[in-house]
Image (cartoon, rainbow, N blue to C red; front, top):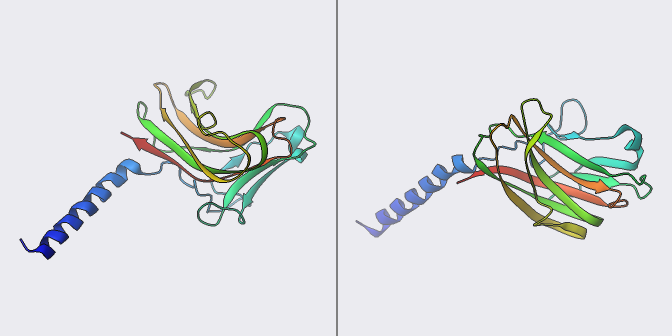
Length: 195
């Protein structure tokens, strides 16, 4: 076999390995880069901000086109320094499509912080069919505590979808009162099956 032919065979094998592995590493969290706009409002498509009516004036949920890790947009949450002394975990939330019960997934993303005494987080919640009981949970904040003021930091965790799971929800956020006067940005989230 000629050297050029051998090189082509090696390139073909590498390409086929990469393509064959892509179905296993497909990102199940559509819109994790926050690039597409919702048709109904100026927010990222498929993502919802969890607001509390009596503290609405003390928190800002923003679809940010100035600070992004990848692409052009990210989301952020800023808590006003005058927020009441009340424990609330503000977050952006989105369901995962196409998960399999019993399968393990890597949840990953990027977080940027400003003046955060307590960690910003990305979590996976597994809910039962009635949506009243959480049957599984994983968070990035224990292994990757993003606090203070930092540039983009990659975080991640692995979780297994337990029996009885009807819905997997991804949330990104920060809590108060610890993070009054702080802000966190989130970008390039992914949920990929691991073998």
